[in-house]
Image 1 (cartoon, helix red, strand yellow):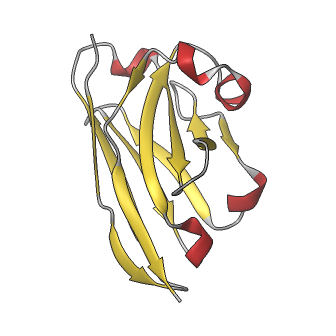
Image 2 (cartoon, helix red, strand yellow; image 1 turned 45 degrees about the horizontal axis):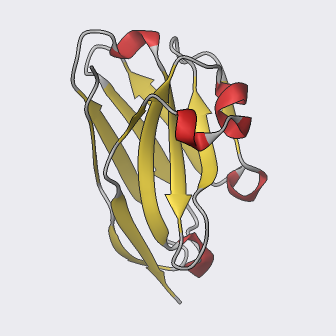
Image 3 (cartoon, one colour; image 1 turned 120 degrees about the vertical axis):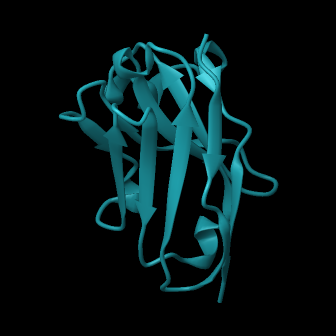
Length: 127
């Protein structure tokens, strides 16, 4: 069993940055691919970024490439999402997820099949 708790969200002006964290419980964290998804008001939840169990393999949605960076620290059971040059359209609840698929697979798999989800952290970007 893995429990995921996100933190680091908040209110930021356009062009600003936030570092989101997702702390995981359980001894098997390092065996999971970890991902970030987001859901804006009135929209479906969408894939943002994912990182494989070793950290060597990452995958990003096109709309965050060059602005967001996903990383992980297996010794701390934590995955991070560094968000830079934030835009108002990045406003959303950001969710952490864990699954045994690949970083590429996490972008296209059926989200209902994801092994674990966190409860999310709200990011609001003002213009």
